[in-house]
Length: 56
Image 1 (cartoon, helix red, strand yellow):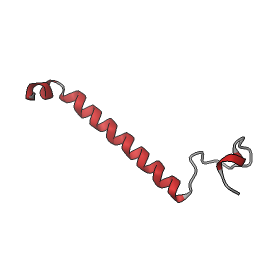
Image 2 (cartoon, helix red, strand yellow):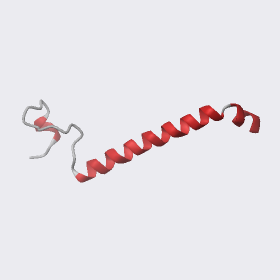
Image 3 (spheres, rainbow, N blue to C red):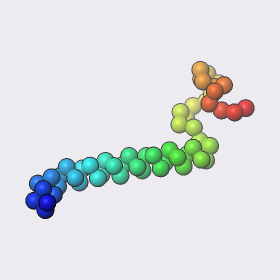
Image 4 (cartoon, rainbow, N blue to C red):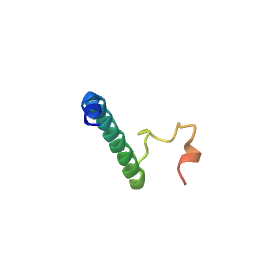
């Protein structure tokens, strides 16, 4: 078992880093959603979905 971990250490480390990055992005999106921020960053006047995404 220990030999397998040593032979795959680079893959394990890279996978752990990628999982941490994805988790951080998801947490940031959830926090932004709870604060009422949108992900597009632009005004809704010219958006095709302006009537669907925000309650008015």
